[in-house]
Each structure stands twice: as C-alpha cells, then as structure tokens.
Image 1 (cartoon, rainbow, N blue to C red):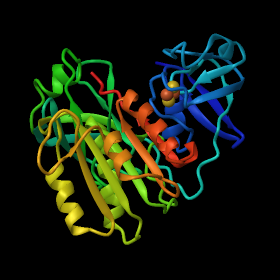
Image 2: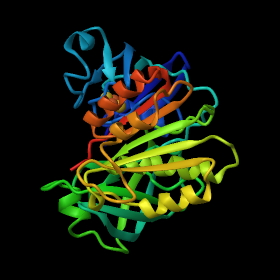
Image 3: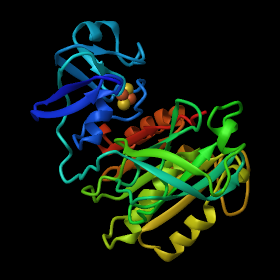
Length: 338
Ligand code: FES
C-alpha cells in the first residue's frame, strides 16, 4: 500500500494528506483546497508552484511546461508532482473573488444517451449515482475501462442539472478512448467511472459585460453549459456565440441554439459559421472572419475561447486587436483526446 505524506499549502497554511502515488494537485482539489490548473496532465504549466520544503517526484511533467532550470530552482507542476516526503508548497492560491469552487469527487454514471450528432462527433449523457456541483465550463476526467488512463471532457449541461451530465466526444482515428471505446463498444446502460469537476475555464459570474464566445469543434461543450446557465437566470447579460465548423455536417446543436436565440432575442445571438461550404442560413468563413465583419471593436466585452490550440491562438490575436486585454479573455486549448 502506498505511503502517505503531509502537504502544507502556503500561504494558506492548510494541510492535506497525499499518497505517494497521487499528484499533489489531485489531493488538494479533493480536499477542497483550490489551486489553479488547466490540463491536469503536465503540458500547460498553469499549476506551476514553488516547492519550499521536502522532495517530490516530477512524474510526467513536460520539459516544455517545466524547464530544467525551473526544476533546479525548486518549481514543480502540481498536477504531476508526487510527494517523496512531507512537502510544503507555495501556490497561487488567491481564489478569484466571488467564485465558489467545488471539491473533486468520484462518480459513477450510467449511459442514457449515446448518439452521433455530426461527422465523427458523439453526444454522451451519463445519469450519475450522486449529484455533481461544478462551475459552467469545467470538465470531468473519464476512466477508460480496463486501461490505467483517463480522458478529459467538458460538461455541456448546466450546473442546475446535477443528476446527469452531457459530454461531446470527437473521434480520433486509432484513439484509445474514442475509437477504441466510445465509438466502438460503449452502449446505453454501460457504467462509466469519472471524477470532477476540474479546470480554470468557467463562466465568471461577476463579469457582467457582454460576452463573446468562440467555439471550434467540440469546444462547443463548455460554451453550451455557460449559455444555458446564463439564460436560466434572470441577469440581463448578453451573449453572442460564434460556432465554427468546416461544413454543415461537422456542425451540431444548431437547432438547439437557434431555438434559444428565438426565445431570448435580447440576450442571446447565435452565429453558426461554415469555413468550407456556402449554405443558406449559415455565415460564410471561419468564426474569426465572421467576428471580424460583425464587430469593429470589442472594447467593454469579455471573451471566452475554446477549440483547437491554433484557433484559440488566432482568436486571442483577433480579440486583442479589437481592444480586449488578456485579463478580459478566458481560454481553453482543447485537444480532442484520443
Ligand atoms: Fe496543466 Fe498542470 S501542467 S494543469
């Protein structure tokens, strides 16, 4: 059985028990101690922290996200680092004002919906054995049965729906989880293990500026959760969703968002964009082409971006060119996981 060490999180002075084979971030999130993180697998660098005392095993930390000199200086990626003694870390623990974070927990879900919604894209709905709390935009880790691996999927349903979660899965040819399981053998009635919620990408409730949401591929999922959450409430915040795909066969949920826009004409605008097909009822071009034509400036807005890293990077440049500052932009680089 794995030994257990004590992790002290400064400047909070909080103590957390952490098994020697458990990433420090995981132990903290499960104990209700919030630390910034995004990918949870050692590539984004968001969870970088100072190890003030004690020894850690750096695990699978990427040498790009944690440079050699940073290791030498005593830094670690907490989503990978496992304790080898009692450890004291100093994290960027300033929780954002007004944000309530929910501890990570384990869940078991039963598949109630499994349907193809677009080319190589499936919707998966899991009925949970216990209720889940999360912020709209966060994700869960799903365990691939029989393998010692997890895959991360954003929750597309709103937090008000606590008994079941909707996930959007894109197929990667040869992928262990998508091609080898979700698009192959998974069936309604199957039981699925998952944990969550994780992630820094979520709706900032306190920001009441008009929001521009830009989604590519299954980067739509967290946006759908945020939009449903906002429209269920009675605040008068306005949202514009730019949803991008190559052709109409790659786009999904357009009937859902069109109906929502008709129901909330003052609060929600839907802009479905096709980059490789001209079709009536859709806008021609990439999401960024269409945004560029729509909005000469975005001053006074807040932006949320989720999609393939190249799209997110290009969108950052466009938004900043339209007078948004980095502090006004929230992003999730969304690698469709194999
Ligand atoms: Fe991305 Fe740790 S490196 S959360």
